[in-house]
Picture (tube, rainbow, N blue to C red):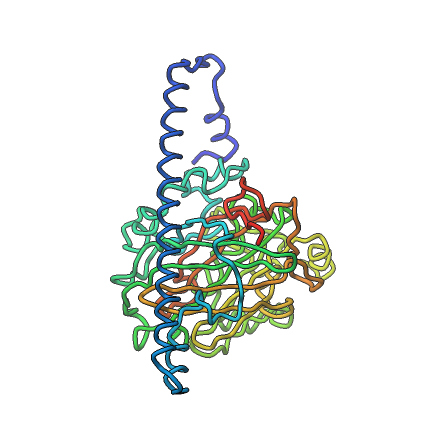
Length: 418
């Protein structure tokens, strides 16, 4: 029953209880941190070495297969078609040995939205509001969080539509490098077992696309991006979320002329309210008191204010790849998700020996509206999502927010030079 202001007073530190932390404790903590850092570095080096061996074996197998095929063009084509995009047949020529490798897990979020993060059910609300990043509290808990939510066991009731057998998290390796003109990212992860969706005919939400991958970039001009990455685009009233408005409500809204609700979308496509940013709304409802719906889909600002936000870099750049249709989309998120208008990107993807590999080539600098240009000496907010196993809408796996930069060891995604 307390207000947020009253809670703040109760939580405020009491100067009467200040105690000096013993030096022995500080020394012990430093030793533990050093030991953990050494173990992580060793594990990372082992993974890099194993990946290099795997790529050499693939390249050798390809050469042997092509040689044994002789002059048979059909056989050569078959072998080329089975080669991983990381092999020599790739049209994206990159020396991956010069790339920096980072392991980042993605997890199943259920119905957790930015409104949930800033609501009273999330114990970390006040820390987040004061500037703490999601990874600072939850960076070591990714697997546990995902498994808890996907099973329906979450005490916060974040998944009302349980999909039996769906995995809660995915370990992803990101190799990042650049040359003078392009950014190169390679996402690699193990394919999971198929988990049929009980509330969808045929068990596949998007049967046309076994996998979709998207990543977003933003500057600190976007509120929450510095702490949560792309999480600020996810709202409680978006498509398939708890407070999503009915199709008739959307069709009858005056905003139907300004926003592409796409209420007649085909199977596997997004319908209703898409992702959007707080910067495009006059207000977001976080508390939901007296039955108010969370979110702010219908609180759209005037176009002049949205244009000003666009000019002020208050948008998120998004690139998405669909494995079935081979479609590469490059757009932005502000008032809504618009998957057109960017400079584009080149993507090569493959599923080889149970491992997905998605390579993205994108120009560092762009003059297109909605694109984030990547420059040396600057740090950008980065997040990504994977729709595996024919999933769509919110039934995906997402990352927390991380930092991406060129040749900067302090960034989680350090894009090293070729």
